[in-house]
Each structure stands twice: as structure tokens, then as C-alpha cells.
Image (cartoon, helix red, strand yellow):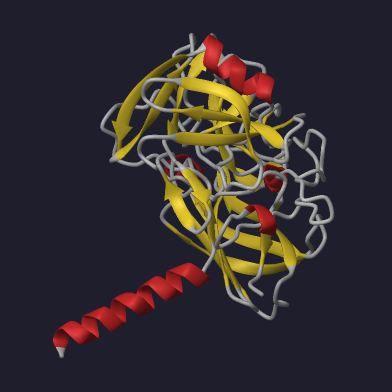
Length: 356
């Protein structure tokens, strides 16, 4: 009887996890090797900031043409595989077959729709992060290959490449595998597969897009079947601001007589959980001790300039807001306004969605 109850509880736990979407910005876990980036943006090179938060998502400046996210789109940490997407699709699915691919043309029996580059377009899911975040191009992945050193390693139990630039900064690409047919994470641990936003014009039945693929022994950027679910590692051309966030006002006291100097809150989007009518939105404070955040509100709405607000709770490094009375299957935009002893910070706007 006890074993039967345990099995039922386990199945219920799996079912709940499967229907509750969760999106997070990256946080580093317990590493087997030391990372060379700081999510708080403390790294610098001659006064130039080399890491920080852009529109709520952590980025690293590797001295290349774009800054790279510290995690895959939809991942909870740098070592998590994140979501899998067919090329040009902006929603995840439970299986990835050619005849169910959104841009498969049944009239011609060819994948001959959407025959253009998509980075930064409406077909680019990474664009949902805002702040000029987008999919990388073929040229940008080739730049990452040619101008950085790649070391196969294991971090927090995940195999992949630690990629280090000449300025000493690094990112980690998990060997995430792919979502092929109904098998999620096929070849994970031995293969890494990441979409670019660059279309590859081919003459066969299966139109291709360029993807980075790697194993421990080889790395390549070449055409791949577009209907297969691969990971996305976003990039951005946005600059780090002084506090890594949007509209910041206020300032700390730096007067004499032993007064304490405080910083403006450095706050980034962390995760959301959704039901059909409710959202739980969580932000992370990256300078808790220096900012002393005392209050926060989360604004939400269906426009990119949300005006409705709820009071959020501040506990440790997390700011949490629970929003109810929403419509199912609806896209909402959220932003956080956090106030501390050093002033007030307004984050960038993040796109979220309720369950259908």
C-alpha cells in the first residue's frame, strides 16, 4: 500500500511540473570549476563593465561584436538546457516531427515557408526578453568559435563547453542535445545543438537553418533540419547601464559624519509561474546589502507600458508579486519598481503569458 501511494504522489508531482511553465534569468550553481563572470556586474577591465543585467537577464561581454547571455532561453541556470524550439517557432511543443512543423508546406511536401533570416524578427523567441535580446546569427556563433577558447568540462553535473575570451570572461554552453520526435533531450550530455537565426538555402526537401552543433571532439556551424527542437542562447548589443537596469532615480547618502552610502537597487527579472488566471512574478535583487530595498510594486498589463500594479513582498534577495484576475492564454507585460535607501529603480518590461 505504501509503495502504491508513493507512485501516485510521484505521478502527481510530475503532472504538476509539466503543466506549470517557469521562466528564469540565469543564476550560477555550485560549480565544479570557477566561473569568470559575475552576475552582479563586478568584473571590469580598465573601468569597463564586463558583466551585468540587461533588461532583467544576465549578460557577459566577451569582447566580441555582441554580448552573450549566461544561460539558454527558458533555463533556470547556466547549467540547465532550457527550452527547445523548432526554427522560427515561438512556442514549445510535446513532440517535434516534420509534418507538424509550423512552416512545413503540405501542398508541396517541402519545408519551404519562412525562407529568410529571422534574428530580431517576430519569429525570434529570444526577442521576448526585450532590451535588443535576440537569436545569434551564423557569423556571431562563428566569431564565438574562432575568437574564444573552448574547454570541454563538467559543471554542476552538466557536460558542455566553458568558453573563455581573451579578456578572461567566460560562458558555459551545456551539451543540451535536441528534441527529436517525442524524445526530449536526445543525445544530451554528449551533443550540444543551438539555433542561429540564419537561414540556409538548400535544394532538398528539408529546408535548413544554420545551427551550432558540438561534441567533445568537434564543433561546427552548419545547416540543420528546421523542424527539430534545439536550444537558443540569446545575444544582445545593448550596453550595460550604471545600475544594469532601466529608469533609475534617486541616490544614496555619501555625506560626512559616518553616514552610510547606499546604492540604487539592482533588480532583474528572475521567473514567473502561470495558471489560466494568475501569475506569480519573481524578481532578484543583486545588491541587497547595498540597496536595502524596503518596498516594491509590480506593474502589469497587456500593453508594453503596463499601468496596473500590485504590491510585492520583499524577502531576502527576492521580490515576489502574485497577480490574479487575468485572462487565460493571454500575453501580459510586467515590470518592477523597487525602492530602497539608495533610491528607486524601474526594471525593463518582460513578456509573460497565462496558461490556455
